[in-house]
Length: 302
Image (cartoon, rainbow, N blue to C red; front, side, top):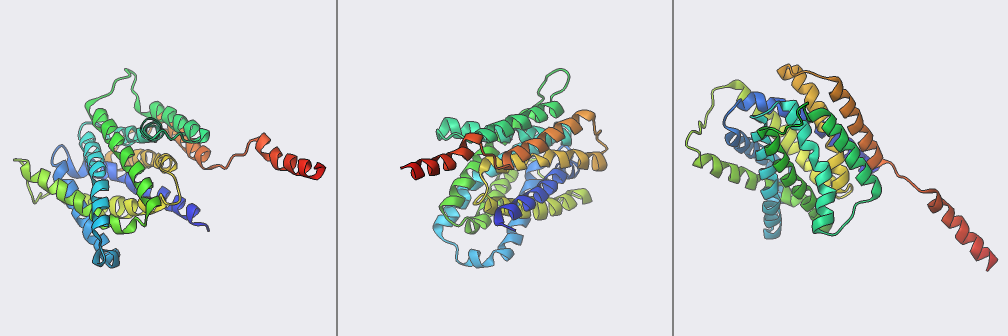
């Protein structure tokens, strides 16, 4: 199995962990303490990955630490805003709105970097966006406070994915992973410290169970796989694969929180799956197939 296919499978597995993390996080934090939850989540992920990548931790260079810290800024903003969004809306709603990242990435690349994505990526992105609207926009076409937080978080996350793609192609990105999560843990710790109502040792078991699940699976596993995968898969394709996340999230929210699975969810989820297939198929236009034969004919005639 080629590496690109392997990482594709691992990413889809990771989106299941991410999807489950939405209702798990909502159950863990309730209506309060999202910063403290993220602080412990990033701290535990840092500890686990420090063991896994101990060789890179021992040989850490200043450049790797700086790169990791740079990646941490949009990542921690994106995750914090999406976590804040969960406290204001349904977990399934939040997970689908977060999928707007898939459209933001090619637009940001076009506007800022003057780099246009292939046509099939645009087709896949807007197919996914239609599926997203099918699921998340209500009858009043209204965007709530939680959705707004999630959309801004999705923009930060799009910036993060573009940076990861750039860094992973420039050098080995593995040495930056532990510094990145350590910086995230430090940021969220400082912000939690400045909150007057922070309760550092919550008594709810769901809070700690949520931290363990999110730290190990949706943080340590998924972001590590994601960062390494972007050496082989573009940021646009990765973001489209991430759209499996809200599908898993909606089903997890149904079983964990009792949220309803609707026909709109199933239709929208099907469109998102179609978008993933479009982005991954290797298309060849008929005229492209004819060119090699034409060139050979001309060579024979000459």
